[in-house]
Amino acid sequence: PAADPAAGAAVKAADRAHVFHSWSAQGLIDPLAIAGAEGSYFWDYDGNRYLDFSSQLVNTNIGHQHPKVVAAIQEQAGKLCTLAPGFAVDVRSEAARLIAERTPGDLDKIFFTNGGAEAVENAVRMARLHTGRAKVLSAYRSYHGATAAAINLTGDPRRWPSDTASAGVVHFWGPFLYRSPFHAENEQQECERALAHLEQTIAFEGPQSVAAIILETVPGTAGIMVPPAGYLAGVREICDRYGIVFILDEVMAGFGRTGHWFAADHFGVTPDLLTFAKGVNSGYVPLGGVAISAEIAATFETRPYPGGLTYSGHPLACASAVATIHAMAEERIVENAAEIGEKVIGPGLRAIAERHPSVGEVRGLGVFWALDLVKNKETREPLVPYNASGAANAPMAEFAAACKRGGLWPFVNMNRTHVVPACTITEAEAKEGLTALDEALTAADAHAE
Ligand code: PLP
Image 1 (cartoon, protein in one colour):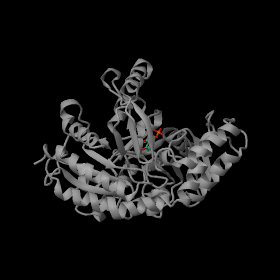
Image 2: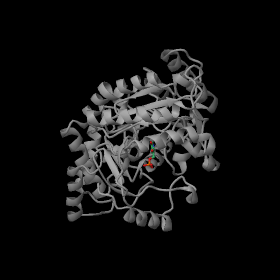
Image 3: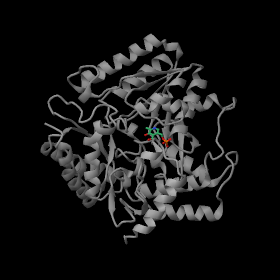
């Protein structure tokens, strides 16, 4: 890409004039102006190109500017840009069919939203109305979105400023052997103790008051902890025993990221409700939704569902989902995610971990990996404290800056970096990214023993 720093400066000045950014102190941020993107890369106006190891916010599963999806959006725009949710529309029905055919079990009805948080809001509403109960249980190590119920269900510190409205939300500990809340010594113990803890939480909350348990199938932002064998099946069994709705949040893990269409496919578990967004159309047009079981759909067969959105099933968004799903199937994109993870990224990260004192654990699958950075491999003390900011966060900030200098755009959260490139990433690109990551980790090593 040709450099044009003056154009970049103008884009940034215009941003600073009127754009109010998410999660930020507006006076303390310095957003990078972006000139373009294609496939696994994006570039700025100064001639710097970045290999996107974050997939933006873990959403561009087919990479940037996939030509078939761009064409489908253009074609749909020429035909019909928008139509209210109450009408039957060809692309909406087709998107719903393609999604329902891929979701596990009998999740065959699709309620469309504009993104993940709205999907979570509506799944929780459905669960509460279906059961007539109020409480919802979620994991401390979780992120479910930034709207009212979704942010309260979220376990990470972004919940804290909005905790005042958290009526009916109860948090519990999910399994995570590397930092076991249960002092477990192996995955099987971790699984058994996590299930016993969940069961006890329900007993003390009152099973008759619990509407739903919501879990990310593989927790994403909170650290990519693949659950031990038997955990999700155990949660399913507990839900069945107490008449609790089981919601799997696949907003980040779904649509190819783990090397299957849905992460639930790895575990043979079918939830009652499944939330999705991001990878459904790689975020080319905002879209999310809830896949609904036959039993819950039946609750709203003769009784109206009290929820809706002006843009539910938006034709441009649905057209992009149809094109995305076809492209993913035709180009073996889900298979690519599985293969690159197993053959290149997983082994590459494990080799990196051996070379670097700051890498405590490597975990993940598909194109969904985390490096847990530590001060000391023995004690597992995190490289920066939980929710560190400012000077306390310097080791991670230095690591991120080193990645960017090396042409790699990293995903960084607390003491972790996540390797979450597009599902379309090639072997050569993955290796290029691993080399840059290997070099950048020297900056983290400087803070480790
Ligand atoms: N659920 C999960 C698991 C997520 O990772 C996210 C976003 O990162 C959300 C929900 C919220 O999605 P959105 O930002 O589209 O509202």
